[in-house]
Amino acid sequence: MMLALAQAAPALPPFRDAAIAALVGMFAAIGLYHLVFYGMRRHASENLWFALLSLSVGMLGLCYSAPLFSAIFAGMARFRGMVLAEVVAGVSIALLIRTLFNVRFRWWETAALLAFTGCLPAALILPMPELRVLHYGVDVVVLLGVVILVSRVVILARGNAPLARLVLGGIAVFGFCVLADLLAEYGAVPWVQLVPGAPGAFWGGFLLLIFTFGVATAQRWTLSEMQAGIDPLTGLASRRVLDDELAAEVERVKAGGRSCLLLIDLDGFKRVNDVHGHVKGDEVLRCVGLLLRQHARPGDLAARLGGEEMAVLLRDVDLPRARELAERLRAAVEVMTVPIPGGALSVTASVGVAAATPGHDKTALVHAADKALYMAKAQGRNRVIAA
Image (cartoon, rainbow, N blue to C red; front, side, top):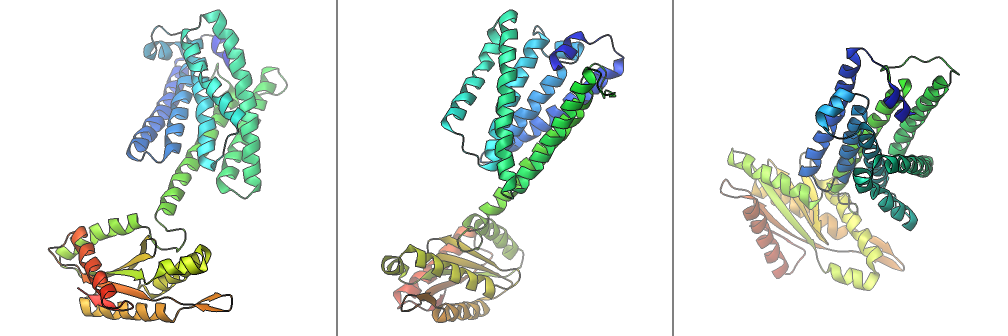
């Protein structure tokens, strides 16, 4: 349908090219923005696939305007550009859905995606008659791929995945718009075209679909950033978050603020894992993490450094007050118990305390607290030592 309309479009008013240029410019801007975003955060691969999808949609839009397409892709036939855009869009959607929902492709799905990606060089070099044959195959593969991916999204939506429901809603509206265009093409229903010479409802539905993918991409990145900032076992902040906060805090101290750092290590924790197993060891860590969150004041930051090592960044306190808070925390850990068959499991903690000074950078502050922690261990453990 899209090919026939693109080839058979009659002479149209100038505003048609202006409308197409506006749509193409919007998709190009969105694609370039997400490419730059991905360049700065390589772990957010969903932004790469969404960027490629947006750029391919923009190229597809150009195929509806001979002057615009010729100005940008001089010497390339519009039909060839349309096939290229469809292949890139199909691959991008598949990889975007896989990334957004952590979908694991079956071996044959991976093989089919690789084979479909191989259509890109073919679309560049095949003569026009063979390219038309390839286009029919591309349409069939895209249709089958959409059916498979939609079925996956439906299953995810039933499992109460909010992003899946959002994307499924966009797909449903897009499907309705395509159906309306098909019925209008055969005279079954009257329909007003948004852009003369192009499918009327198709672009409206497609814009909404791309919008839902964009929202899902943004929400996915936000969720991943939040998860990266929280230790999943203890609920404490991650080491990365603590590092960022320490860097900001030492600058605040240089401007006249006060701050102290507690480094906490559970005494003999390896024996807990060896004797009672890692499940009970994890339960101990969760309980200690809860204690730290409960004892942290508003504005303080409790974090897990790794293993049985944790930290608390105390703001607006001097060293004597920080030592007092550390002692309360140590005593709370000492009386904490975790039930085990036939009794209860308890642990103790050693705490090193250091106050930030205007001469400290982040590394020097951590080193001072770590030195105090080492002294607490050397003096018998289960105690607080201030640097």
